[in-house]
Length: 118
Image 1: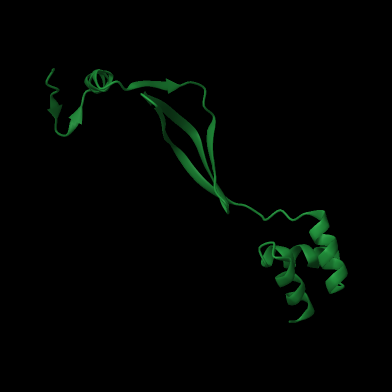
Image 2: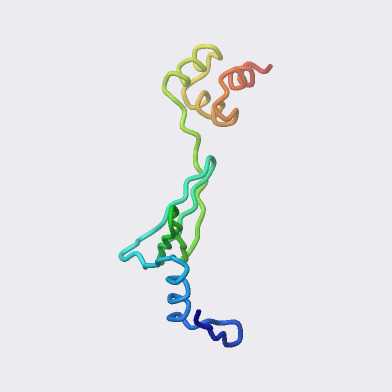
């Protein structure tokens, strides 16, 4: 087995790639990546100007992403059916029904009760 020299905690890139290949790990940079989008339940993380490295090992693929991170909060999407039901039950206009549904995180009963003052 080859000894890898480390200088001040840093390993030469070629040495690192050689050591990883010996362990059965293949790496390659993905070309022409514009952005990476990570979708969470309540927000999205957008990584622009991304540099993505794919690491493949037996039975597993791992992506390493480096870039400029921004977050976007997602608006709750409410269905037309839910909007109409809240409008009818609470006797309010469309905008009030949508806002109540968003405030109640999509919970119909909570939205209606809030609008009725309950």
